[in-house]
Image 1 (cartoon, rainbow, N blue to C red):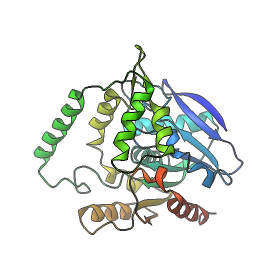
Image 2: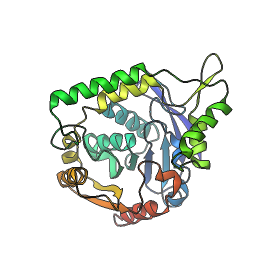
Image 3: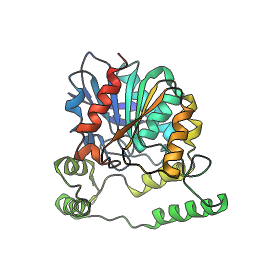
Image 4: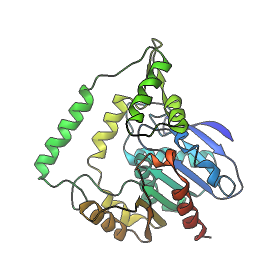
Length: 290
């Protein structure tokens, strides 16, 4: 395994590369996470594939610029990493934010993506493939309100890394999500400030820059452009309703998409809690492409 700092699009991206002669797989994390979220996943794949983990911009040990948080810009970052590592094509596995970035890669760089596996990016916020039930005017008011809330939320800082980690543990334990893998992800992503204090990873400025784009994403513009095989991961018990209707609608827009149903899927944390079932589904999906 090698650690690299890759220069791309005027920033540096942190990369962990498990070298192998097989095809490459890029794992792209959710917002607020980092490459450490995949540590329980790597052993399922590293004997067959070249596994590449990436800290997306604003996360982990990558640079934290003030802008560039649109999914298309972040997709260009990952393409830059592929170029640097001399990887012509790769499978892409993305969770939430990572799913959005992977979807953009498959749509706009189809020659670089062997297959796409999504845990997220399965509904827009507004429009014919969105979940918003009100008017467009009401939606815009909602977005402005949410963005204002993000901007006005105070930054919480902690005197030591230990006090930060105690706070994060208390939060996760409310959902029974705390374990060694979540702890490792949180500790890796913690940011030390100039005065020596600490804050959690994925700061307010980066989150606000991302969210002002996110609300206006129209994933239905991306799915028709996806030429590779696509696997959409969902909870097996997803109930009938608008969410499922939209998901199936987006699947039908893609050229070659299928759904992988996972018992008890907890988006996006099951990767760190109980990943065996989802990894087996993904491996079967990848095996059928050989």
